[in-house]
Amino acid sequence: MRNLKFGSVAILLATFSFIFSSCKKEEVRPQEDLLPKSFGIDIPSSISNNVGISGGRISGRQNAAVNGNDVYKNLNTFISVGEGASKIVEAFIEAIRKYKIDRTLSVSYTSDEDKRLKNLVVAQSITFESKVWDFQLTITDADSEKNTDGGKGLQIFWNNAAKVTGIAIIKPYNTDREKNANAKDATFRIDYSEIGSVNYDAEMTVAIAGLPVTGPGTDQYSMNSLKMFAGKKGSVVDVFGNSNHPNAKLFSGALGFNWAFVASGNSTDNIGVAEVGLPASSLDNSDRKVLLKDNSIKAVFTREINIIIPGINQNDLAAYLVNTNPPGYFKNDGFITAGVSPGTGWNALSSRLESLSPFNPKTIGGLSISFK
Image 1 (spheres, one colour):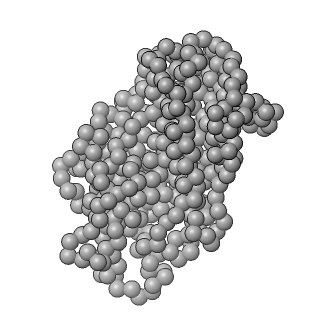
Image 2 (cartoon, rainbow, N blue to C red):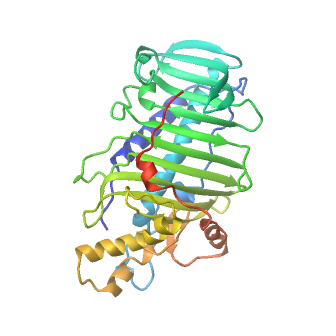
């Protein structure tokens, strides 16, 4: 199996790493402000870590089967990226607690990161997207406020209640021009609510758009956008979403696909289950069967390999792709098996997958995120 490389994902993970390290320089005091205490959902590492170590081989034909971690490692990376976006928001919130935001205010400061002047403004009773929010916090790059994007680097809307609900939008380039010079248009949005619903105690939706992509024919299978939902119920977290790779090539050279996925993980047992599809980026369809069955990894790989190796022995091909049988099963150290559940804990999670479905692929490629 060809190793997939994701240039934009590498940029994004580097951004996360930098923001975490820089924001944590400040000593955080006990909360004395109106800022949200949390702004995201922790996803079990069984489905969000990207360093699987289990071989995932099937006994009897170990040399014939593609490694399960190779099949699913990009899924784990994309979920980790989505979770990381919410962690960026929480890191920013902790970094600005030093201003003890308990009222409307306006502060100017020089960023420790890019040494540029930033403006921080807190406003009260703000309407955004037809909803009135108790507070809005905005950080801008002062010298860029006349630009089309207003120089906005961070904008958070939230209600001052015991159970947090809010929206956060980030444009990393305007928070640090040095570290994010190669991703000038990248923008994230996190919608978070602890009010919950019938199915979940807390929910978040992460959207990422404007990531730089490389040209067709290169080895960089760049992601330009991602949208992911996560819902938490007790120790269980359900996740579904899509990442769009418009210039990625499959085995036969077919250009442009989504990494469409659904997954469920249990943080107590640190186990997980997932299904992945590879529908075309241009596909305009929301049907779960089309996205995850007709375009499952198993179905797409089978089709593509038959195109590039006409007449291949189908028994050998099935043996090679045995670890792509849906769904995939995971523990904290990575992929363990495919198609057949390894135990009752995984059965409870796999039964949840049928109620989850990725987004319409065509809408992911067209994602657009805007500040107020």
